[in-house]
Image (tube, rainbow, N blue to C red; front, side, top):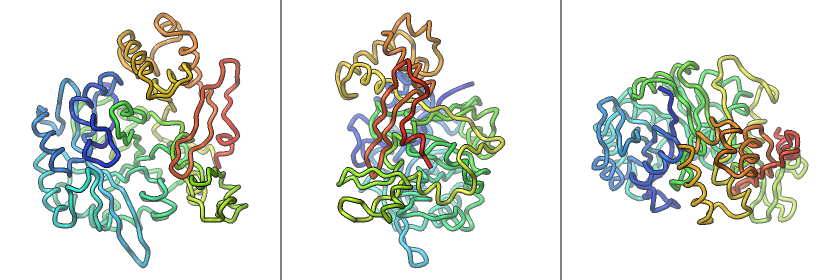
Length: 412
């Protein structure tokens, strides 16, 4: 069966998350979006774990169900530690096939740090040692490095990470077979590194509110069970892993370099010209994803390796509605219209991906249809995100060519 999966979210027990990040609201919004399989996030938090255990029906195959939506047990752990005289801050996703395994993981990790302090716990634990602990508990678990290019908290982060996966995971590297690209990069950027060719690239929302689940996601065509999905990811099975749904990466918070306090956004070339410093205050800038990819890349822009999983860039429907109406996405009218359109067409992804222009025009305002079609065609204008600020993305008018701004045309 073909289905959409979003594995990386956070519960209401993580910092800076909506209080609606509970099982009921996640299932409700998954149906609106058209997502069949959700990650639970935060299984290391005792209160969230209890809610999960009391809310789920066990499918008997490593997945669980609530109100017709399937769930997989996932969590994110922040490792902050020193190694060979350097400090590292690495975020990793953990996937578990059962509550029994989750209980063992939590018991072991609770000896290292306080799991109750946050839905995404911070542990002074080497990422390689975390992997060893998890795989010793259950070899069917998965560890997937999260948002691998984020400057401050990731595998390849410019401020906190490694240059090579092997340096991070050491003897456990062979057990790592998938990587999460994060909102500020897409697969095309990752294809520039030959060292990543054997890894499956996945994309997830990392959502802190129900409305934003599915802003990045994964499209599968396989049986709905943990073991099969794990094998598809491990083997990078193109027949069963069809494509990923991606942000336009320029919209991500760390795509370009910059200094948020001074409102300075810099391309890699501009950063180099300013010797890595903010031209206003002369403090070091936060080096973003584009710059970091360029530093590690061994292939030119536009290189496409063989046997890679394809992807599609999209903008969430509520963002498109808000832009057409000229209001913010938090507007009550935006959500009201959103729900009305979903009632007509089925799901958000039906509208964004499947419905033809003729079908859309039967139930949507023409300007909104133009906006959806422009997004499908890549006709968007973008000011790239930087130093924790989301990029500013707008829909080009229907008469334009594929016009992405200078920031996008000069990605590298």
